[in-house]
Length: 429
Image 1 (cartoon, rainbow, N blue to C red):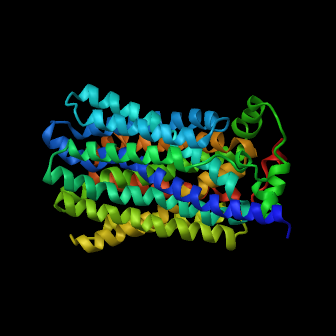
Image 2 (cartoon, rainbow, N blue to C red):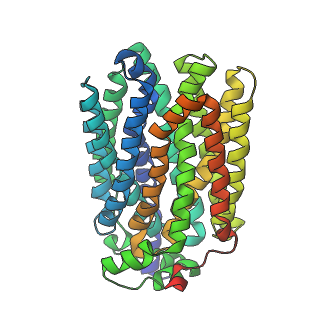
Image 3 (cartoon, one colour):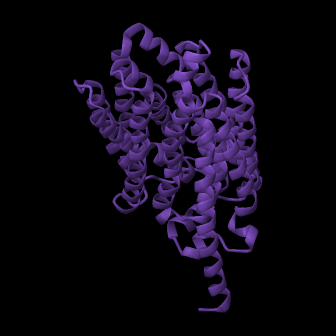
């Protein structure tokens, strides 16, 4: 082994650890200012006389804005420094959360929540670029899954933290404290993260790890004008369209459970807000294990093909949602366990579909590819806001659960073409 090789190994090992930790804490930080509205919605309904339909409308506007931002930001992130892009976005979401905590006008709160959604979209594309640059194909399922649990860490902390602040201080504190935390984390990212390996003089990840699948992906991603890459490898890529449609359904289920779960438990089973939010936190805890199992299984069992594992998990979503709906007794421990199961199965496809989008596209278009399917994901999240509120008003909670159960079935059907090994999208060109 040459001195240069030993130096490269040392630098790669050092920065892979640091970048993973930075991405993990940073993306969990985005959740501190993203899910506060969901966690505080019962208090806002009580204190500001906001009705459920308007809470749903705010959620829908947030999701639509965030989805568009992920795609636009993805195109920008592909061509900029991920370190600066991610840290700036997180700081701005923290500032907006602080301002939000001082407002009482419904119009002002709605406008600020939409602005928050735009800067929330700066986190995912930066992480997608770093994950595809620092981790190769035959290991990416596991590492992407590890990073993906940042969703669950942030999502599990927020409902408990915000419920405590709302109950013991006021609803404003439920937005102000997470805002301050986001600003602090964003400043740390600015100094802690780095960009792609080449920015440190290191070889591509495929060459360093001698990963043939990754080297093939790199070799089959020719140097082209970015506009050409966008058209050929993203907008006309039929694999991305299949993933996009399935993402709609995944995010309807995910957002519906997270945004409406505590309201369902407080209204239908008469739990306190803190009980309901603690139970809802188990949805995120289950997602941690589900992401890790899905990532490991797609690497080890299906040799890097993400589709079959997604189909297995879609079946689990249907069964666990049905069990949560049909459980006939009011028992907080059983409901928390069932939410754990729903989270386990939801976060598998949520993680795998985003990763598959990056792997089915050009190597230099990870941000745009994941952002493209992200638009559709948050169309699904938007449908879980105001439209689902209308379903609840018209058909009560029975309509709510029937809708998300049908979504789970659709996920599996749309991804059936992925039962065979993923082929590179270049075959379509």
